[in-house]
Length: 453
Image (cartoon, rainbow, N blue to C red):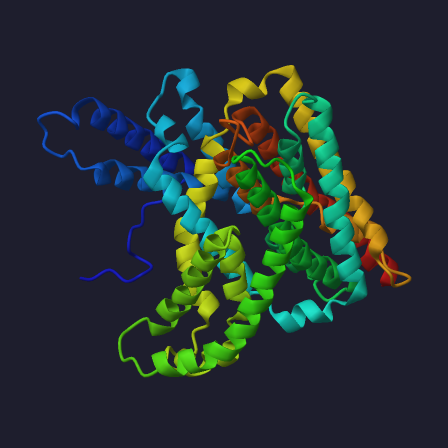
């Protein structure tokens, strides 16, 4: 007799079971390292990458599950599990040290960043950005300028002999706000309809655009400095003009070319046309941004910004009205954890225990919090809670890590702009600002709700 659904026995796998499985995979990695290159025959590097992906994805979900249980964003769990895996060598387990420098994983993680910024752009529209009002714009500008100079000052104080471009880049890492974390908390609190929430979300979007422009400018100047030209104000202005020009031209041309482009691809009868044709736009603009000296993530964000549902509604109807965001989501789920886990693995805990690094991380975090809290003064409307707006702008999340990872890949005088110790301090800043924001937002917006009820 067949068992019905209620009678079917099920296995229950808890977090401990996943830990055991990860430990088993670690043993498999060690076994591969010891004997896989010998007479076993399986010498393809793909084997190690496949096993590494299994570890990363499973570990990311384990860390995410833990953070969700603690009512924190999943990204923190992915970052923390990466830190654990990358530092297991301290207790004699060397299976995961390759996470810090594996070229294939680095490429996959960069692809994850491109997809992440593409998804952020898809959730943002040009009309939405224009509707946020004067307050959002002023809050965003203050939220970029103040943290930028505070971060620059902290870096110069702790490393007075360091290059000025390094201080500038570190200031740039404090500029952007994590839209996703703030939006998630406000949504859970059912406070997205409030004026304060609309200002925060609008300012966070503008904040990210301005932050990406600063990132492009600073990265370009650092690349130019490699030729010995040093800090040139005209070069900074030129790169900023190029950033604005790229955004304006991409948006303008996109509005003209996307309708006929999607009318053309709609005639294709193959599967997955909507997703593939949209990724062509994403990767194409990311490539174009890179060729003009901007970060590819600028192009990816712009692609998401100009891809509006009206352009591909016929294709969407062929896919049972499945939205583009829903189609992109599985790709983001697959590739983005690779970025966060590998970024966490780059943190060297041995360097963080040094007193000067902890002091640096503490001051950097204070500068990050104060800088965003000051931006609450930009709220123009009377009767709104400026403290709530400032608190909503605090988290750095994935954007700060993206900035730090780019800094770690840029070279200046033969050294990375963001060295391992500074990178660890930035990670501490990201973790702290991301951890403290949800309870602070909950506390402040609950007070607003009580006062208005």
